[in-house]
Length: 70
Image (cartoon, rainbow, N blue to C red; front, side, top):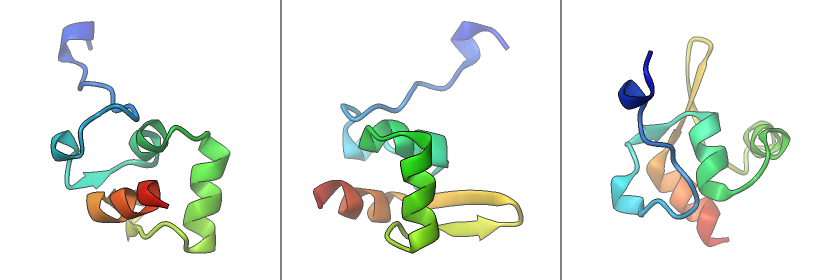
């Protein structure tokens, strides 16, 4: 995949209205500005709402915005 085909990277400066409905843990990590371990700690503790689709983890945009407001 070339650099032009890559999806735009999500950072903590990404406006909330540009976020997808569901984010991957890596995208949530970029938006919240925390490390990989912290994201999984939040998921495992239940502090960050998420959905599992088989082995995939997806975090709703609304849950991410609530977590960012804390």
